[in-house]
Length: 344
Picture 1 (cartoon, one colour):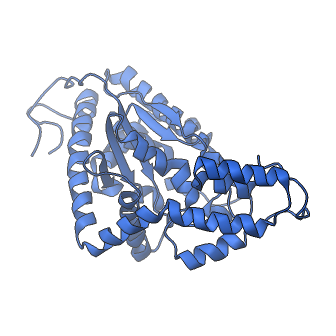
Picture 2 (picture 1 turned 180 degrees about the vertical axis):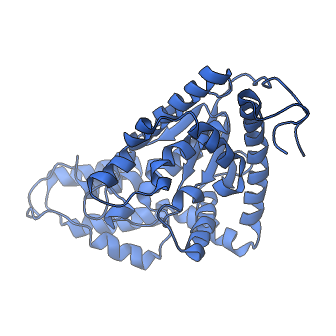
Picture 3 (picture 1 turned 120 degrees about the vertical axis):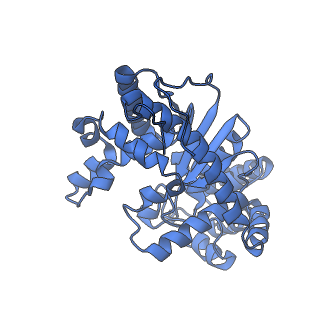
């Protein structure tokens, strides 16, 4: 239904804690995704309003297989709920199910300087490596800004590499507010603790780009093979070793109980062990850590239609909020003319 005719910017409700974050469905979630982002999503869903979306529009810059994209979106939703995201406490939805965000993106584009986007990391990185960069990648930060502003988000959990995009969002919102009045809430980033310290199988940061990931829900036998092939150094077994900074120990520490972590640290400092022993302990710790999530995932998969119902409800709630924000922006910049409301 169209909004009631109005000639003034509707008032905003008082600011409260509202968390917003999105995750791209460009592959199955791995340990880096979980410990670097998803775990914090789950913790923050009790901090106030929480909106979490699966960023399929963003994924179009890299995933060009329609069937694969649909499958990844579905798997992402199943995995998030299995890992502890509670649809009764947080709004979970698919980005493209909220078309208000794409219109809001255009409104922000009209106040966005080219130079601001030319300085953004993702675009600069591709350009410096001589790789083709399409307009989608170039304007990615504007769509991300619309994702955030559409829900009056106050807190956005991000890794250090995404802080620049929050700064772009604040710049665009500030410019729009300066021109048209106080329309948008300016968000603040919340750094994800430990996100950069999840090592992959080669010791580098775990990332699909490096092909060094261990997926959360992959077959346990396949997962064990990956763990047993994790790169280690060639120091002799009897030599004492400092556990701090050892990527195998770091992975074990993410999964193990504190008492087990302390015992493992003592073993490192004492020496007289082989890395195969540590890898086997990591296999067991990982299986135990994600056992409940695996059970929940099996239950969700067996309940046909459950995830689609969750996403449909989430989209309804998200559209209601995004529609209110878009109405404010449309009225403020003059798109709602006499006798017309906002959307319609």
